[in-house]
Image 1 (spheres, rainbow, N blue to C red):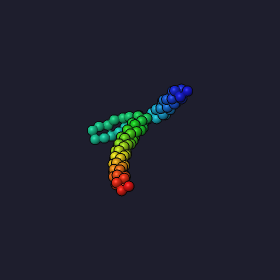
Image 2 (cartoon, rainbow, N blue to C red):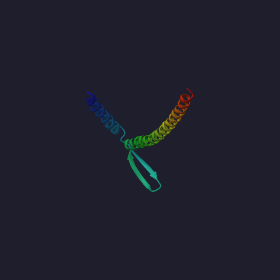
Image 3 (spheres, rainbow, N blue to C red):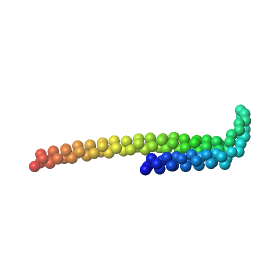
Image 4 (cartoon, helix red, strand yellow):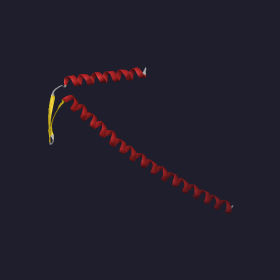
Length: 100
């Protein structure tokens, strides 16, 4: 059932893409320093969407790496504190047993 849902989603996404391409079939002339190029409006829009997705993935990935690093540092410091507290508890327990 889930695979059928995915197939239908892909089909409708492709259908929407073809309709978008058909409705935006005008040519755009781009002048830049080294020359002139002409593109269809739909390809410009698709290229800008893809560039935005790539930037989002890159920056989200960097943020994820930073968050994992921060979590790792926090876990290490937590383990270090637990170890120190455990050593203190053992030392205080040994002192108490000497007194009794």
